[in-house]
Image 1 (cartoon, helix red, strand yellow):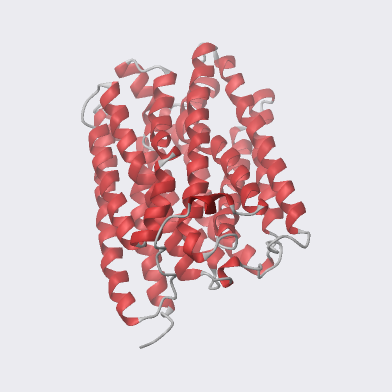
Image 2 (cartoon, one colour):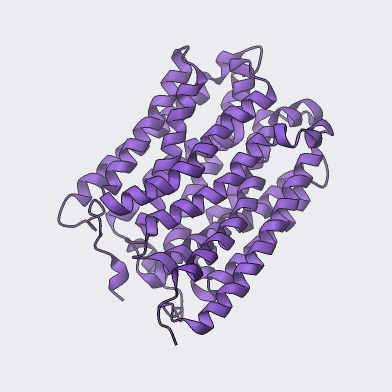
Length: 427
């Protein structure tokens, strides 16, 4: 039996798992292009619109940690298939009626599957690619997944016929893509099962029991990465995936199609730039430094939006670079900070805390907009939201600096080197 799976096998599995994430990302980002429709046609407030993404994150404050444990117990392929099915059910419920409670329930169900599915796919990549172009593999995975986000932002243009029919048809389209994701997850399940029979994958045996105290035994570098992850994504997703299109329409006078296109350029840039940054990190190391640069660029966006007349291209380019650079470095770095038997749990814990941030700051941003009467007639009402995101970006920069300081010392994992000192070797 061949002990090492060939590159073709590893990359096929990556593509199948990434296509599954394409549908996941599209369905998540389907809310932002619909925000104005939901407000005009269904009378939703900004708080309700923010809730549709916040409630996606709410169950994952706990569920995604259990999802990571489930991944470690039943394996990545079974977990990916299970969570993909939950996503499809949630998307269908979201599109079913104009009732806000039902729509919110659908987003909650979708969230139960979506984040845990991401954990399963991320863990699979860590197992298949550790020591073999890990950064580049993560970059390719994120590129294919973010093509789903880009497609969602561009959907008012390429799927205009759906938007012309009202609020429901675009959500039916999103449901169809979650079904595509389920089919890709099934193909991944079958392909990996066949490959596992032919190759030795070097995966750790499942733990006999869950040792909850192990959750607090990750070292300081891991927790700095957690802090950076929470603050970074608490800016990116509430802004870019919930309110930015509406903000561009009201504060900068763009049409729905123009605002969706402008927002979509961030994801378009990430499709191409994320693998390039992943490959660069594989060659150069300097992981904490790259994360610090990315968070600095994100911080600069919000003073520019708030107090200058700079073309929107400036802020879009800065967000695009940050959104391509930080995730390309952050997610692979976790692989070097956790033992193999705890990799799913580590990603689950990271994503759990990330979802606390997404829940809180989606709701807080929507509340700030409503409290300050933000809208087309009062674009200055968006300023408190803009500064909220600027402050979060600044905290992200602080966490990145603390990570760099520790990794430069003797107690770090040498994340700044090309070949970090991995805890994967310990067990």
